[in-house]
Length: 398
Image (cartoon, rainbow, N blue to C red):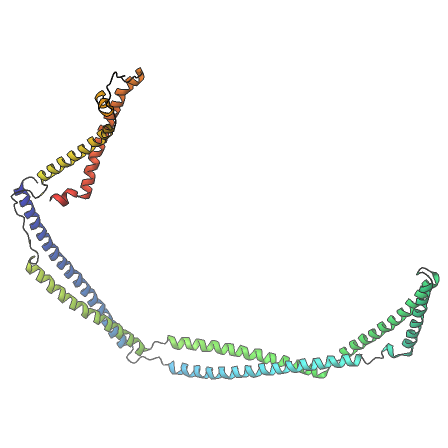
């Protein structure tokens, strides 16, 4: 404010209120911390009492309470595991036996098929008979005669056509002999195939029996696995008093450790809060109390006035130089003409303007004056804003 004494009194009062508020804040913080830690200690004590009662009740209920069926269940489980091992071994043996039977069946089937093929192919080959030889000889003769006729006549000649017909007839007879031979082979194969090999029937019967035994053993193994799973579930579900007690003890120790830690923290917080309350803010004090200065520190009005006057004078000189500089190098009056040319001036012609140009001169002067006023109105606030933003006077005049 403008009154130094009022400013000093306000500053001293603000410092006093600040110290009081800091002291109240410290005391309130200590009180809140005490209340919070007391609530935490109370909750921890309740949890500790609850787990202690639970431990006592569990000890009373399971002092001599171990399940009587546990040993019997363990014995049954051991027997089932042994039976499971035996069933797995038996299944392995049956699968190996079935694989061996199937391998034998495949070998015998392959050998039997080869025997059928060999027996069927033992029929007389028509190419080894006299009839085939006669047809072959006749075919060669006809082919030779046909070639001779073709050298003498065209293909449509009756003799050539007749000879070709005879040649084709002999060829058809040979093809028919081959077809009849193959048909006889196929009929023999079918007859031999219909005759069953006793070895094949025996192996198929054994494979069927082994597959049946394998399926039955697999069902028994599945049932055994199911019983083992049920017994494991029952044994795992049996309450173990020792394990349960250890779990309760661990929980009790955890709660007890948490309770002891909270008690230690409560003691520290109570001591700290009492000490802060006794000090009553003794740790906070005013290092530099408000004093009454003999003269204002800032702003320095004389320096500001001198600086403003100097800046205005410099700006005016710069504008004058800028506006008048161009006149130094031009002829403005008759005296300038006499001075620069050294000749007498006989007459001068005034500036000739039209009425429109004459009327435009006052308007231009008015526009220039308005532009100057607008520039001043814009420049002054802008300059004040820049000076306030950069703190130039505060840096050099304070």
